[in-house]
Image 1 (cartoon, rainbow, N blue to C red):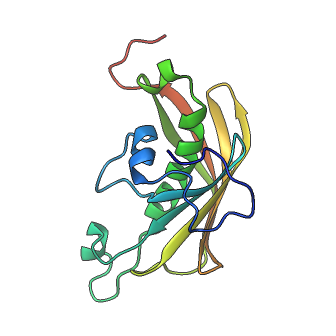
Image 2: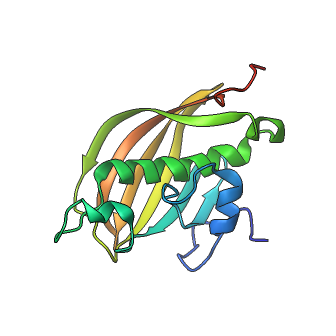
Amino acid sequence: MADSTTGPAATENHIVYNITEIMKFLPHRYPFLLVDRIVELDPPQRIVGLKNVTMNEEFFQGHFPGAPVMPGVLILEAMAQVAGVLLYREMPDEDKATKLIYFTGIENAKFRRPVVPGDQLRMEIELVYRRNHFGKVSARTLVEGKLAAEALELFAIADRPGQARS
């Protein structure tokens, strides 16, 4: 099993969680699982994840034919999923089966450059605050060391639909 934490000297070659381990935390599945690996983890404050963008992504069929660009909303979602790994790993085991982390808001989202097939997203997430079942993260995505997107993302932890309240 991979190490659970790593220091700031970690590289993209160091894997904290691979895709199989990420799938143990996140409920998302293909085609909506947008995180390939976690390469840095400083719980409960910071996490860094990677997404390899390929031409095989379904959204490129229509966004845009002949000039494929990853939709900005999916970059925001990918950043939220990386944050989700950080939050789910801290969640008590009994809550993991009955709770979901919902993306509840976006503040100050900015897109600085297009993301295209062949790019690798480096998503850096820092917890700004958390109060009980609500919180905010600061998220940014880099491609080749250059800022591609940034936002403050709000979340809520709540019962899964159809689950009895605890």
